[in-house]
Length: 329
Image: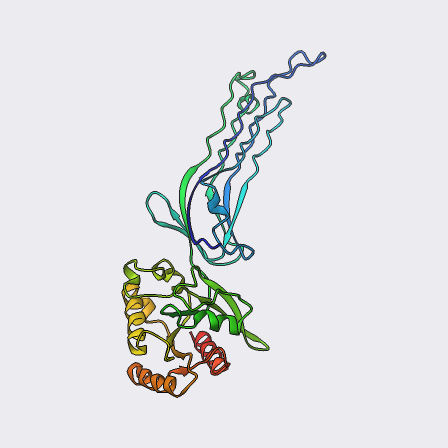
């Protein structure tokens, strides 16, 4: 299963208490203070990992707590530090403050770390209060409480090419054709319920990361259908590939299908509408489909790629064009 949003509460560990202790040995009548400091509380740290692809696992729990530091010991022994809690999230995860909604960090690169909650400092033992005028202090301080906060995690996929279009436009079939991804393919709407990512080989030395996103419908930017939940994933794509079904079996006129997606991208964000976009006439496998592709090309005002994922027609041309636009951007 795929999950791209969750909210969690994180609590850092409390620092260990300082100790009041005095050295007591048979042949040392004036031993003096020897209480150690408490250990540092553990912190809660997020790490962007390429091994994690969804927020499903981290979202199973609502609260994460790091370990407390140990109290100080006699003989001026410092308590053990609490172990940090490391939470792995997918690369591309945005971390927002749960209370105010402001962006704390965008973990867009592998290995990036964010300390969500810092562990409390350990308390001071009485040995640290000893001085020339106070040689036998009976004073120690407790450890500090660790930080506590609520955060919202939002995953935005990192893909170079995003496939958009109405439901059943042929996006999943194309992704399965050019990569090892195995998206669900069927002849009913919304077979893609979550984003699918695949890597397409363009040449012996180059490849493209392609994301297949759930189909958009009229009003998606306002919350209709499934597409609005995944429009955010398109924001990171360098190039958009808009597939328009031109086959005779499509219930929607190709020109209207193109206009619907074009409008929804503009309503969602002007930046999305301004992204480089390749328009593709998908399922172009007969004379009737070719005629519809020509109509679409006239409407769009620029070349439209003819594509048949089943026959392999136009696949190589599309990948080459997408690579050129990605590298140019």
